[in-house]
Amino acid sequence: MISAEWLSEVEIRIGREEDLPALEWQGELIQFRKLYRQVYQNACDGRASIWVAELEQAGIIGQVFVQFSSSRKELADGEIRAYIYGFRVRPAYRGSGVGTQLLKQVEQDLQKRRFRWVTLNVSRQNLAAQRFYKRNGYQIIAPEAGRWSYVDHMGKRREVDEPAWRMQKKLL
Image 1 (cartoon, rainbow, N blue to C red):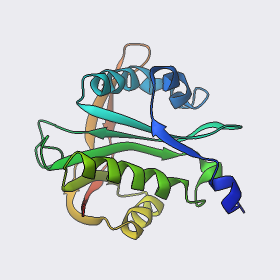
Image 2: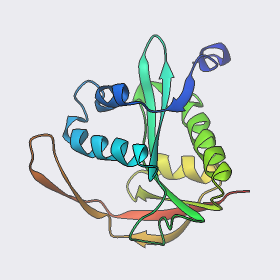
Image 3: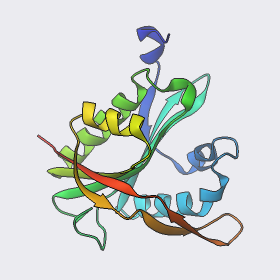
Image 4: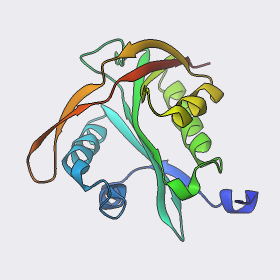
């Protein structure tokens, strides 16, 4: 198992433009290239943030995006409620505490920004992620259709249908 010494070497930081290729995880997530670029632009404009967990010898091993405002005010209203998404930890590093460290850093940043609530959607089929969020104080509050779309790296619009649960947590 992963030692506490190893875990202490993980750096949790704001994502940079040069991190964008690494967010694709050696091509596994290449279809989200344009989406990642848009999130980065939103971060530059102060409408979002990108956080990464980096281990020097392995590169980026975790990532999460935060949206401060949305047309769906129940997700993010720009004042008291923010929305996290795209939360991923590479499979080899799951269960090590990296995800918890990353989530805690995001929550601390949101508190500094005076947000009082954080929301997220989690796939109804992803029971491990649901358990992770519940352990970290999130509660299921509503069903989500989970229908969304994006333009892939080849310029083709992709439709996603992934029923989800909306979860939330009150920040202290």
